[in-house]
Image (cartoon, rainbow, N blue to C red; front, side, top):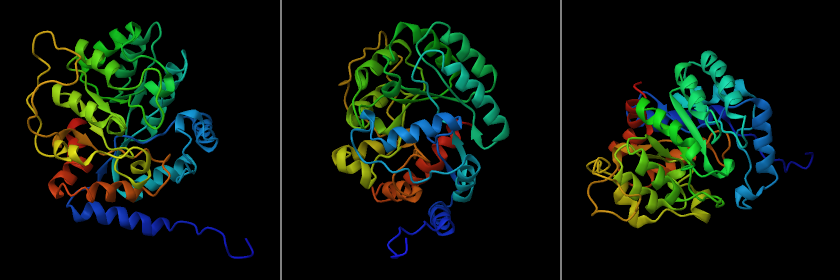
Length: 327
């Protein structure tokens, strides 16, 4: 604008330097980000349009997309940040869509070797079969989005697929918390029913289970293969509408509790036995890049200011994810 009031373009080089200084200062070889979005461009643009329109699932919160760019540019940004492994979180909102997305993901993974091959699923006939095909094609992580898909994760149609994934030991990043807006099947109770049937399922609870943080921490403490990702949690943006309870911070540190999932007839009840050690090796870095309303570095600094120490930051930002995916 001629009056000089236009918003300045972000300095990409300075931003990349800031991110790299963060992980270099921790002595890490880079970052492992388990929650980034790549999907067919036509689908991604519809997602961006949804955020722009303040659709009901955004909770009415203004949500500018910070990294609205072409695919190659977005990939370049992550590499400049020093993200050595990331995902292509993609998800269907209706039957018949998951297989198409999974086929796109096969091609994306082949041409993007630093992306952890990602697949998805939906409660529909044949889901177990196409989940097996995706695994045969090389899928290393799945995405389930209970809020967008508007389905019960404990739906009987999904039960065989969960069994396949539990047997394979393949992580599933699942958006099942009720933030930023609740859905019919969001919250800890449906996920508790899934884990009661499949206690070895490697669920990664997206967004730390926002806003039902403590209930999902209960689940992680009861089931030894449950993890949580940090996506958008602890940031200034999320703290405005879904603050993480500071009394729960000690539960994020330290070593995990003994696995209670092998006890006879595990119950889906959430408030179960006494508190033991923390979950420090089961918290994973996630960011939601590119669909975030603030710079990438802010997620990292938000974790840093929790004051849980450099060992914890090293584990969360790299080591836990590297171990999970055998990097």
